[in-house]
Every structure is written in structure tokens, then in C-alpha cells.
Image 1 (cartoon, rainbow, N blue to C red):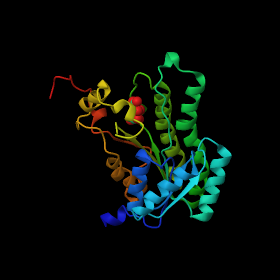
Image 2: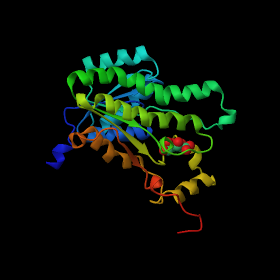
Image 3: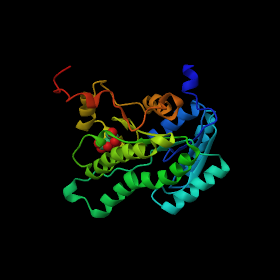
Image 4: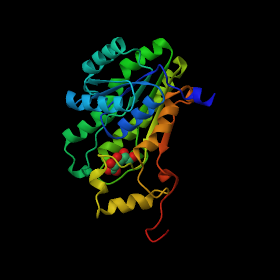
Length: 264
Ligand code: GCO
């Protein structure tokens, strides 16, 4: 019974930006639960092909498509193509995102717009053609990758925080509009994870590294695999009456104000 609840056999899952990092780890979780994976990237076809090979090596049925989630006509055409070549998209994970660490007083408008366009508008652009089809079929699971910055500010990440805070509300609004069509929309908010995105702030000697370990009740950076259980849950029948929630997978960060560095 419980394994059936979480089984994704026969489902098609599109995970954006899943050529590396957290997206790849979430996608592996879905693939291991039985889903056929479709990943996207927008840099090079070579990078996408390499990632698809990595999935296949793990016994996962995977396909890769190159398109830009911020380009409406490309995203619409890709959804059309994926549905005719692979099958109806049952699960969409909006993972593609970027960050710029620039203080607001110095933030050039074009960098601000780039972050908002990718991390917030991109989710709207990508989700619309997928959800139109899910609503017609009366079935679908959408997972938006939020952040600690959906709840908290931090010096230098203002545009990212604005986008991820917006994404939390976009998630709730999508959930509101589509619940009656049996489409569930939830968010996953990763805490601080050891990925290439956080590599520049994880280097030895950077006080931020120690700060995060101290600020996280679990006392460590997240391992990308820590996201797989929540992803599978939100993609499966186990969560059929769960919608509009943001599940923070953060080792306890949001539960606490933190502690002084001299405290165990
Ligand atoms: C930062 C980090 C974060 C994390 C993550 C936290 O500079 O503060 O990169 O933004 O990537 O999103 O949830």
C-alpha cells in the first residue's frame, strides 16, 4: 500500500534545469520511483546529452530537450514536442533558476530583470502550457523550487529573494486556481545545500561556511539527495489532497532564530 502510494511508474516528469545540482538530484529521485524523465537545459545540447547519459547509467529512462524557460514560444513548442514524443507530462518540477549576489544599491537593472525573469516569470511561462494540458486531463503535479529566500532576506541576494518570495505566492495562486481540476501545486524550499550554486560561499576560510553550519540546527549543509523524499511525495498520489504548501527541507533553519557561535 505505502509503496503504491509513492510509485511513479508510467508517469512522465519534466524537470527544468536538471543537468546538474539540486534539479538533477530531484530528477534522480523521481526516476528511481519509476518516472520517465524529461530534462531541459538551455546552454548546450552536449551538456544535456551528457546529463541524459548519467541518468541512463542509473537505470532511468531519460530524455533531454534544449529550450529556454524564459522564452514563451520556445517553451510552448517544447511542451508540444515532449507530449507527442514522450507522452503527456504528469509531473512538472520548475527547478531552473539563477542567482546574482550583488547588493541592491549596486544592482544594475538588467541583472535584476534577468533574475526575476528566470526565477519567477520563467515559472509562469513554463507552467502555463503544461498546466493547460493537465487541467484538460484532470490530473497533474507541479512542484516549484522555492528557497530560504522565499522567507528570509540576506545581504546581496535581493533580486533572488524578491523572485523566490514571489514564487511562493505564485505557487499558492496556481494551487488556488487549479485544485478543482485535480492539479496539485506545491513548493519545495531547500535550505543550504552543497551544490555548484553555493560553491563560491562554501570555500574554506569564508565565514559564511561556518555561519551556515552554525545556523542550521542539523549542523551541516544539505546533501542534494536529502531532497528526493519530499520530491517523490509531492509528485505522487501520496499528496493528492496537499496543495499550495511550501515544504522547507532545511535541517531546521526556519524553526529557529539561531544561536551564538560559542554555543554547542
Ligand atoms: C545564498 C544562497 C542561497 C541558496 C538557497 C537557500 O547566496 O544565500 O545561494 O540563495 O542558494 O536558495 O535556500
